Image (cartoon, rainbow, N blue to C red; front, side, top):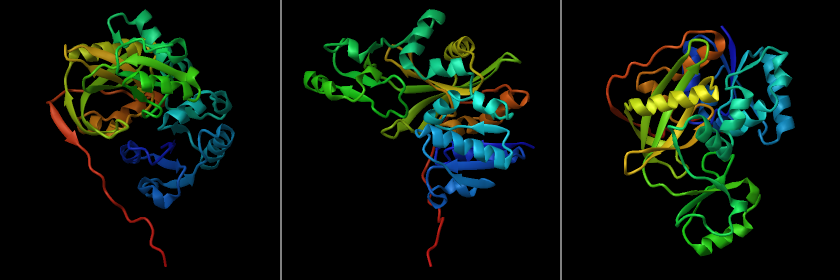
Length: 323
């Protein structure tokens, strides 16, 4: 079987990814920026490496290349947006070595990782999908909508840099925001967050979608409890968008469900979401089918069974004893 490098083992999705790959018989190499004893899943991979920050692109790319060569890695699964960005910009460096990045094509990711560009793409190509009005912060002298408004980086991740602006005083404080050209402004739309997690395989024409509502979240929107349910219209909209973008493998689309029952598209997370295991527990083997898109396997259909609520808890592990 193949050797797979899984990055950022501290990510919430790492546990189910490692379990799934090892169940398939693959050798799993893992890395993280923290020491092994700080990352419980570092003990679940076959080999662990401590990695430099992906934001330090040159060192990170050298590290990935060295690990892939030393361990004969055939597939790389990046678990964070910053890693996706760095690896996506440097694909050619690894192509001649036969290394496959398990993520969507370069142009697709460049669109998905720019929230304003993605909104414009949807408006032009998927007219049935309702997007959120979006303008650049540097184009606004005053708030373009009633307060509160959302201000966030167009290439942000995990809600880092997101601000809810409630009045003129808070708006005026935006004059001191670093790199203001990176920020967009949107009206605040109240309502629960809904995820449509999917796998698309271009060769077979399959786009499999699993829907969940986030019932309880951390402050950076990591779901702690979800409701798995069926919405055929949202599933069809998700398939339409996945096909238009040229998605390969698994991504998840984030939506807001407003009081009138309409879904507003928020963003695309172009890698496994923190809720990947929710999808697996609902009956769809997300990781196996994602891997099949890159390893020439067959993608399975999802057979919805019943609505369910799934919750997660934290668990402690003893990883080192001194003396």
